[in-house]
Length: 318
Image (cartoon, rainbow, N blue to C red):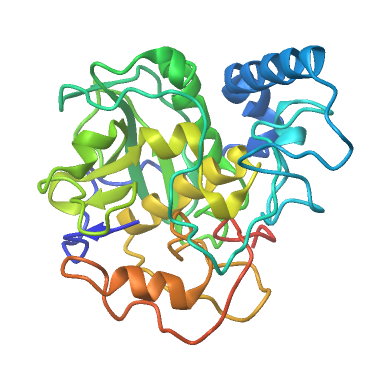
């Protein structure tokens, strides 16, 4: 979301790796989905079973927050595919993409405040892609209850899986990404799961737009992923929490790679991954939110265009 000090150039921690065969990439959802999202899915299934055993809703009854009205608006795979057949991570509801979509959805509990310090999740990976190599760590703020995000390894697997996917930032052959751990030289950026209160601080993301958001702070080389959004997603994505998480990583890492915010390219088209989809996919609404001191004023035109959600930089894999 907000891009902080993004004009500062990134510098590789060391020269790119010796040229070698790029590692084989597997689709993120097929490789990591059930492990990453098993905990929130089980919680949703438990709630649904309890509700159904106590009440017999009328055929037209819908959950208070969401209800089914056709397929989810997201461009990526639905949550049911990530978590297993017949299961949704969030209950489905019609979403007015031209409405007030920046509000944090209802959902699971999360830790509101941490220590403001992060620890590196151990682990590293092969270089993915060709071209300039960007190295990153995966980190988690100290003081977060791990039950809200299924633990450090789950978050790290999600991040690495997303950035290794053939539809992520390495697809055009211009750059490579590699996960490193704390024993390596300083990484180019640090993907950091962070509590809302820490993201609100003026030295991290700030809170000029008073809705939960993630950001990239270039002066700290830190991609801050807001825990509240990681747990609950965004209204524009409806039930597709897994798709939103893919978007959040790709969008904020996009800032670390030098990309800025953009608007919708055409009515009904998939939103660019650098659109502020945590707030929404309607240009008029996002432009209004940006029009505050500290907002990304002028980045998105008020041109009456509304997209549909999309979580990938290169949805076709090239």
